[in-house]
Image (cartoon, rainbow, N blue to C red; front, top):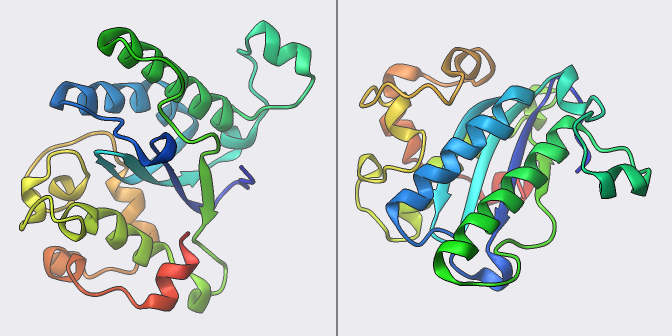
Length: 204
């Protein structure tokens, strides 16, 4: 992952060969706890959505996001490849979640695709900033997939926090309001607006 500090990034991964990664409600909640443990210390999370076979995060990177990780396993140290705090956090998040789910469900192998993707969506030039499109896209996922007809019915995204329906603490909502050009009093309406195709191409 090529991440630089002080920018917004779309982070995403999916199940290996498109397979399910969250089998029941507790799995979603467990993964969110793991995000809080392994990811949130090294970046600010502005939005998230967990889907049955993939997940999305919108993060703001900081200096300690890209700083070399100190808590490496022996084999990682032996590789002599510099790993950032964030990359190490993602790796630990996915491996620890996989280990727990495989044990519970008597599965083997990796649950996730090999490489977690990171796409920069912010820019110093406003016309090239796709952060707001990414923010809306992440929240639209459950509706677009036909899982709900009202985004408020999907428990596993940050939509309800921004809609004022839940007092979640995983996202830095103040930072989101600072960086995203959004009419917040119209949040629910704006979230459901169609995202232009050219903007969608920029967030993947």
